[in-house]
Image 1 (cartoon, rainbow, N blue to C red):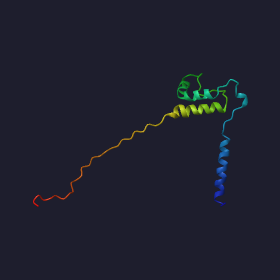
Image 2 (tube, rainbow, N blue to C red):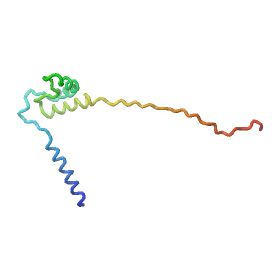
Image 3 (tube, one colour):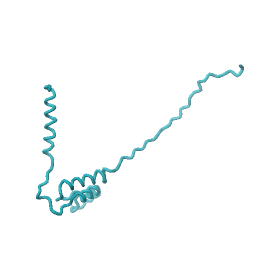
Image 4 (cartoon, helix red, strand yellow):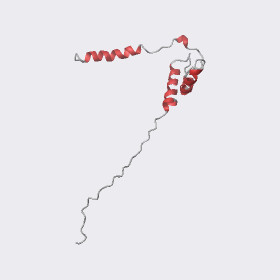
Length: 115
């Protein structure tokens, strides 16, 4: 292993470790027995755009249920937003073929009609 690659390798190994420290965790006591699970997470993700706009004007409306069942609620919420909600819209690309008509000069030699 060369001396030039060692700092890059250390940085590549340290970056995921440092980023994992930023990961949010949920205390087990925060999960209620009847907390929203996967299906409600899916629904909340799907209605996210509307809930977000309403939450700007109403204090009692939130875009994310707390407490929830943890990972399954988060997974449903993610799928609701990305697959079925806002992220599901495909971009509509319009392509137009432009045909430009350029008159071509007649380059064929003129024939004499007196042959």
